[in-house]
Image 1: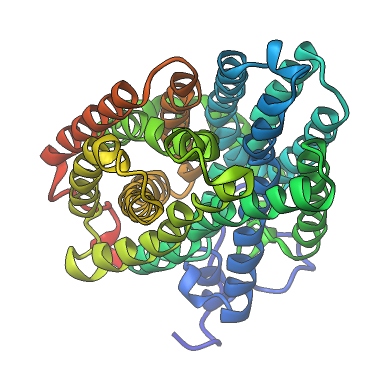
Image 2: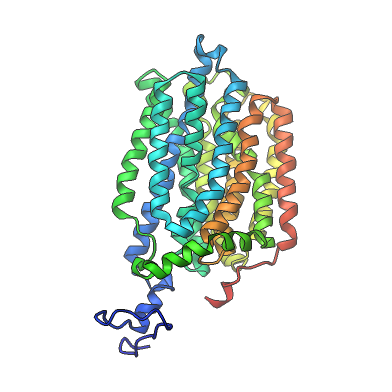
Length: 448
């Protein structure tokens, strides 16, 4: 339509003030069709939200890096042993799971900006607190705050991206975007490990440097983030009233959606393996390869994160182009590969070969991040409505976060063989629950 088309009329009771300029058809469309938004704004949002979620990892991974120094400290190792550290991880992940169920819905109600900023401030404060204390109760309390704060990132930022990009290209765009958490898991441990053990020679520095990094990211987010293509269109008394009244209804509706429940179940089964390597990677490597040293144990898991950067890009392209916006086939194939490599991890690492360890971590990273990014981001946003994208992403990720508790807890209690066998069985079950939805596509995929 031409720019001179008649203005779109408002429903009764919502007439604009007489002094407001008329709204043209194209201006009205701009608020609901992200593909009509200026490319500069879209890629600005892509960049700032990508940096925001990657930044969260520089505080999240500080504890994983600090474990090496804590376990090697003759004073602390008696009170903060492997089992206690595993319990602290479980406390963190329990708080993280609770936050996922809350923050996604709150981002639908209040917008992503306020939720993400709140999470960043809390994560920075909790990181500083852990760096300044060695008391067990302080660690536990700070990890609760850290878990609640970290969970304010993913679902709101997924909603933020979904507001700017249409379904037909989300597989590719969100695939690239989902490299943020793989990059965070890849870059943060060696960076913090180098600062903590080579520069400052103190595990405390991991927390301080991680918090400082996220503080810089917070400034960038405040300056450049926007909630939606046209924020004025989603503000005002009418929109606020709708958000306040629709929160519980959206939650109930989302919980009744069988596809959302399937995604949640699959993510619950997948998450333990990823979080075990994410939170215990340096320790697991050190146990299997005791001669590599502390810095080497933090560097070798780079293979896991590096493959995780490539995986979301590849699986997003495949889901869009090969499977025509069907997300389940790509997930199932990734989970099948993950099942095999997890089952072979302990026998193959018995060779004491650094090369074999690197290769195995790379294949695990490729398969686990491919399925993870597709379930937690692309599919969660696709199968949620525009109004409930945050709620859907929050519910799916909340289920995954409950599973992640096991990923943080089990490595402190189980031997390597039993641990990886459990992870392999869980990955196989995750693929099995998704197979019946092989041909399922997003509701709006045909319309775009």
